[in-house]
Image (cartoon, rainbow, N blue to C red):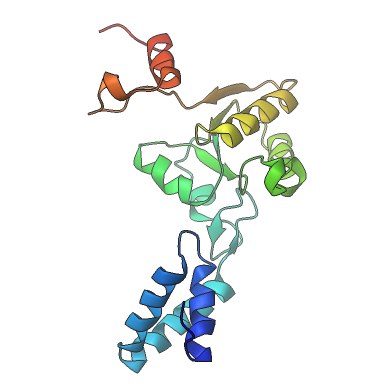
Length: 199
């Protein structure tokens, strides 16, 4: 890549820090921003500063919030007997949109020793403390991506929570609507067959 003035290169480097953004995409972002009115960049700067200064982790479920305890944890209509354990705060919106009415706990990732993500770097200890503080909880839904890291996290949690009087469940897997059997992998098709139900 050719050399650009230092201010452009600094912003390009900053954008490449974002996931999925390479140098070429970052450069397009910078050139686009340079064409915008000065007020646009200033409002983006203010929004980023507000993001950094206002957002914190919920003391209970560890999602992002502007208060000590998030709105979901404070909502009295939520089912206090079920906690859905997710990897990231963004997963909450997806599961809520599907109609889940329980509460959440965000681990902050899934186990991946190669990347240095071990049990002590995740919010597993806070989950165990939470279960001790909330005896009404009878079920944990382990809602992770169906990949190696997600499966490892499910296995680890089921092992350390085996002694607790809890129902541990995981998300069902199967064929998505609109897909073709021809393109389904063996694991997905096998899960769909095992979890079949009567019509």
